[in-house]
Image (tube, rainbow, N blue to C red):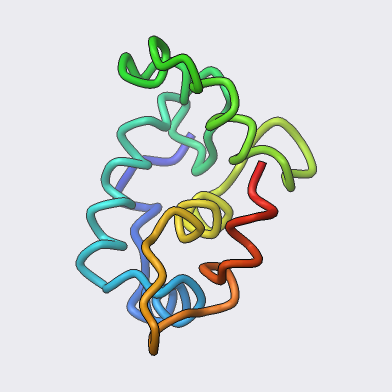
Length: 112
């Protein structure tokens, strides 16, 4: 297993994620920190169980649906940080001149 410092985001990755999701670089860095804190196996991915360890999500009546949204497009039972950010971008508010593909009204309607 690698250590957390070996999994740091590079400036190019932050720029790509910003372009794709609309999150600011500082938001991406904060979310990456939270992502790595949830990654108990320290392998750069999260499982459903990692999400269910979040107390607020575990007691939320919609918790299962929220977790399912993260794994709806996953090829296996784990997601990486990019996949995590793509799903989170659907929850961002739509701004008139700043809408991107992942944050469009149509994508929000498709989100299960």
